[in-house]
Image 1: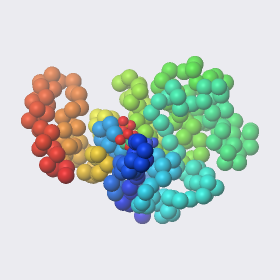
Image 2 (image 1 turned 180 degrees about the vertical axis):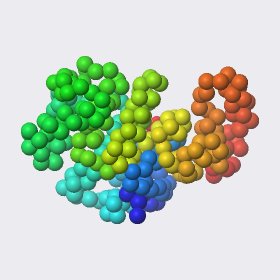
Image 3 (image 1 turned 180 degrees about the horizontal axis):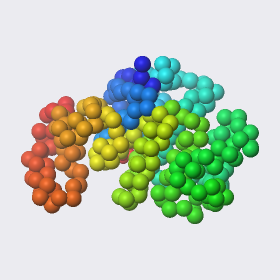
Image 4 (image 1 turned 60 degrees about the vertical axis):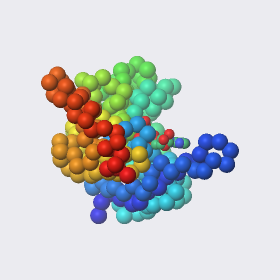
Length: 280
Ligand SMILES: Nc1ncnc2c1ncn2[C@@H]1O[C@H](COP(=O)(O)OP(=O)(O)OP(=O)(O)O)[C@@H](O)[C@H]1O
């Protein structure tokens, strides 16, 4: 049994304008994440990646379909039951500048989820020290405000907060997209280290195939609300079967100028129309 099983998930948002029909943005998506695994979810902007993550977190109500965590259905849970689940399923958002409460010291940000789960203040304090250590920040960081940290350090704080309750799954929604390339690499290495130490699973959302390739065990590709391809990361990112994945691959930047020119030419040949034929 997988840790997370999403089956035939449909999500619709209200249409714009008076009496407009709802707009379906996920058309029956099924995926699963095993314990300790990283499933990379890749697709261009607007394909529905964030919506899948938000549905898993209970922040968006599905129109239909099921989302099971550890065998238990999580859609339609009461608030109280959802709080129980929050211990096991956490999130790291994209923007380290808005995801941390600017008026709270880092120590308070990290102890908040622990106190909500019933921890005593002294217990929470020592856990904060260990969380900071896990993400490579000094104990003194607890006394400081988020604005005193760089983007990469803030993302480390957000990761520490997600780890506070010892979750089994973290939804990582574009967690490195706002960071420069060398900081991205450090944060990705940190996520891998944490997974090796704790066995946490990641549902890792990104539009960037290079990032997805680096972090994922398996990759699933989303195109306009449909999954078009799923498989081992090395396979999907080196010899994709679907035309859309090939286009994503050709669009990722590479350092070698000759390879870059080859990809530009291949992109030109892989026209939008041939793509449409295969997807529909
Ligand atoms: N709350 C909402 N109300 C209405 N439409 C929404 C809402 N949230 C998302 N959408 C629409 O759903 C579609 C999928 O959005 P989503 O944010 O999941 O895509 P994405 O692949 O994560 O894109 P991005 O990488 O740009 O965030 C888009 O067309 C978006 O405009």
